[in-house]
Length: 422
Image (tube, rainbow, N blue to C red; front, side):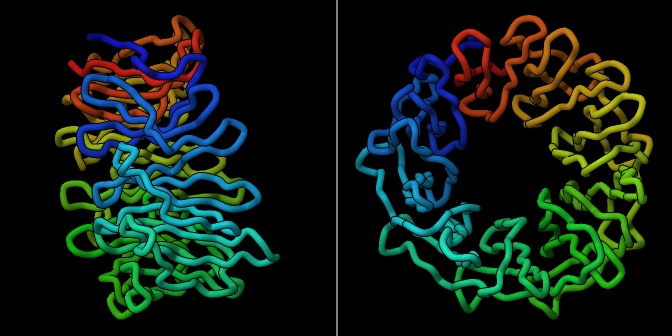
């Protein structure tokens, strides 16, 4: 009961990462001081390494855990610019190398309707070569359905929506939005972007709502919100924002929510929370404030019938807000670091009828907090590193009626912790 460091985790700081859930186990990567491996945690909180997944310390170990089709996939670094793709079900017999990629970097592992899809980028030559791969969990079924244009400079915002993959591709001459079903025949460009506007960014770039996919892209008149049915003919402009770029698209209660950022020549950014799917429906809910520099990822999270998010204003800094979809119902939950200092809530997840996140305050540093959506019900959950030092909890993951995270209590280093959810 309560909060404790996980039994069976390595001592001395195991640096746990890549938390995912699969069936009745939590999967993660961690170090025992000599080897970095995939670990599993059962419903009782007992942790154990998965045999056959370890890589000696000094070499990048397994990373990028991604669940697809009842398996956990991950990559291991071969060194000298190459990688291997693996999969496991948590047992030695179910752990298998699917392929070696000696001159490639693997990234953006995604579940595409029960199949794994991922990107490979060449690590040799002056010009990187990108290709799209899929896997059914067998070596023979790990294949490259198609290469991408040879003048590709970069790929971003890779998003799997059911059995469709969307991403943005930048070439030497243009930027494109792609849709793919993981086959050569089903991969196509749906939009050529314009130029002269700011990159719409990565976070929440593609969102499905009511049978259509919405996304921001550079249009003829600046940053524009588009909708698509996955075909070029079915891709249309919804709203043009000129220099206001939508960020962090999120579907909630049949509406589309997003922040609009309006940079002036001095990079002053106006944060406006909007909702709506058409120019007529789009309604500004709150002018949340002003911030210098890059846009703030809102981390939209649903709890009950409210939408929670991070936002900044001059009086409170970066804090936790909520909305019921109306201007009057868009309010600050609590000023965790009183005044203009920022509580900077991060890693928002909902579990047990409450919101959980890490945040800063002057007395406790960055620790684990919880909220029921009210000011009075927003409180410090546990101070793992007592006093001002920060435990800096990350990877917040609900599993088997408890909340798991990676944190450093200042005694044994960064380890796996679990907290009972009331």
